Amino acid sequence: MGFSGFKVVLTGDESLVSTYHYTYLGFASGLPMDVFPAILGELLFPTKSSEYGRMLTSQYGLCKVEATLLDSGFSREEVAIVDPRRLDEAIGPETRAIGVSVLDPLGLNYGTMLLRTVLKLMGVETKLQSYTSWATMKILEHKAIREYRKRLKVIVGGPGVWEIVDSGLQSKLGIDTLVEGEGELVAPSLFKKAMEGAELPSYVRGPPVPVEKIPVIRTPSRGLIEISRGCGRGCKFCNPTLLMYRVIPVEKILREVTVNVAGGENKITLHSEDFLRYGSTSLKPSDERVKRLLETIVKFPGVEEVSVDFTTPSTVMQNPKLVKECGEILGLTSGKFSIIEIGIESASPRVIEMVAPGKPKPFKPGEWPRVVEDAISILNDAGWWVCATIIISLPGEREEDVELNLKLVERLESYNVFIHTLPFIPSGSLRRAKGLKTSDILSMSERNLELIAVATYDAIKKIMKISSKLVAHAPLGVKQLLSSLLYIACIIGLRRLQRGLREISSFTLKLVSKEQVYSEQIREKSLQVTT
Ligand code: SF4
Image (tube, rainbow, N blue to C red; front, side, top):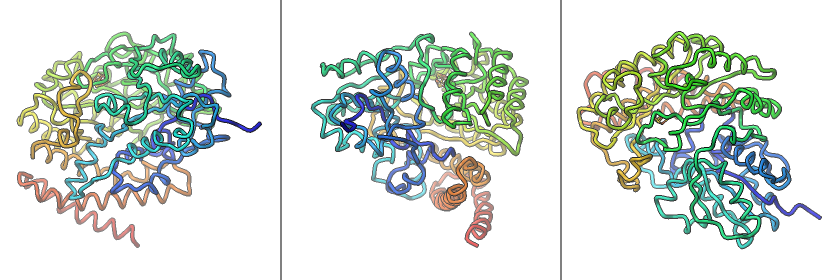
């Protein structure tokens, strides 16, 4: 008898489960489809899968759900993480449950809103949904799901679930159960019930998982491995599940490195909210444990490169020597840099004290702008380019706070830092602080629009400077193409933004004169690209 479908199909939209050719271009999935048509998704978001669409490497969250189901008694034959482009091969009469992980199903998250605002500043009116949202809807409306709908349940989880909960669109989207929070403790019983054809609850909150119950993944996760979960600094706009801080033991981390290396993933990214706090029970870094972890992974047979994804300025400032040593262990130099993310959120001590009082600790909110600037300098010296976020229009923000943000962006111009100015989205304990319509989220003062324009202008210039490095890990055939595409997009973006900037009345003379200098540079570079 032929194959009649996996019993449990786990999947996510193609931009979520893609390898992105191992580049930093994943952010493009937040672009609206007016400027990012489906054909570009095929090019930028490749997926790797084998027989019946089973993925060879996938998103970490899906790998964890698969692992927790396998640990609870499901067999490898019953459960598969499936390529969303091959769902018709994986779903059949035997399928009883589809688990879908969502990141930004309705196109409402911070990155997507920033891209829409920037396009507006460039004079591009957008009407269509984001690529990620379109690709998520493509799964939920898939004909294979519709064909077997009476026999199977649709369970949706992941970081973007709040959008569906808050918009009340669950039944319209044909979803049986929404899982908010961490999935590992609740997934086994939900999927077992789906196997029996039993009724499922429409909403489940997944509690924080004790560290000993966090499973070890079986499918490679594109080299991404969690080293700690949660944060505990308690910013009000942040996901509440991050309140409980847990450190993953080295032995478990190494098992996941083994899974990845065996699957051909030789570049390992250690994921946490703050890698410098690995192994520490307080906000103070534990030097020995951080260094020992990095050294162990760097030396692991088969691993070619190791990177870390997040840190916090206040942790960096507690131990600059450790930051320098970590850069050395990872082999970073000014020519071989890595990118790390930090959250600035606001340069106003008043706003930080209101919405993120834990972020500067052990420093005072009043010291925050200095802590941020010094930490970026230390990270740059140790070999990291920094990707930093500022959240604008936070509840309670005043004009003088916006001025402080603008000043900080100007001061940081000479550093290796990209600043992303993200429009505030109602989230965390501020979830009801604002409406969910795009017009609610994007309404902001002219000075805040100026802040977005200035920061984006600066970021695009810097991206142009290092564009070939941002796609350095792509296979030879596509590297040149992606590098050229990114460069041309930067040129078009800068030109359009220059026009938009002229229309912002309060734009300062100093920056306008810089703008003319950049025009000359762009003209020169575009000549080089076209010749
Ligand atoms: S420091 Fe970052 S991860 Fe921690 S609570 Fe604040 S925003 Fe969330």
